[in-house]
Image (cartoon, rainbow, N blue to C red; front, side, top):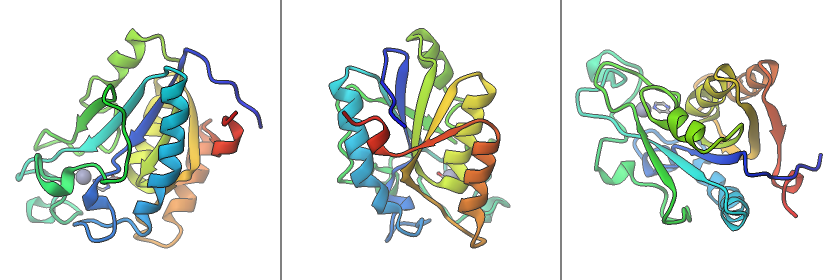
Amino acid sequence: MKLNLTEKDALIVVDVQKDFCPGGALPVPFGDKVVEPLNFYIKVFSSSGLPIFATRDWHPENHISFKKNGGLWPVHCLQNSEGAEFHDNLRLPPDTFIINKGDRPELEAYSGFQGTLLEFLLKERGIRRIFVGGLATDYCVKHTVIGGLNLGYQVFLLSDAVAAVNINPQDGEAAVLEMLDRGAVSIVLEDIYV
Ligand code: VGL
Ligand code: ZN
């Protein structure tokens, strides 16, 4: 496939944070492997003058998703903690839009659209197609992709720049199939790199 980027396109980098990488509080296996391909996507979008959005999980201590509060997960991505920082090697330009999510204690918010200004900011810029990669395929990437599809965006899944938690071994693959089934299009860097 060969895709030409236009002014209606935006890159969305999902939750590439230290806590989701090896050594972090909720490590995604090989989570750090998305950094290098994402840096290429970032270069392509930024050199084309296209907007880049980076979501980050941004939880308060009393967040509902933590085991101690009845949820599924160990404490992770606490607001302003080191674990909530983006991976050190992720090269986001200074004009990246940072989207905090999961900052309300009672709301899970796997999707970058949930409880954030993401849709407003995309609309404001006339964005119609979003290119989504990051962590994790089976949670926040999946919900952000499906959220975008439900809002009417054309969604491209950056399949060479995602990694899955895989609590069950097939979760990542199942998530990809579900995204494709709902209308997302899977691409790799070579499909847009000129
Ligand atoms: C995520 C589990 C808990 C994610 C966030 O970013 O995919 N997963 N919080
Ligand atoms: Zn979380």
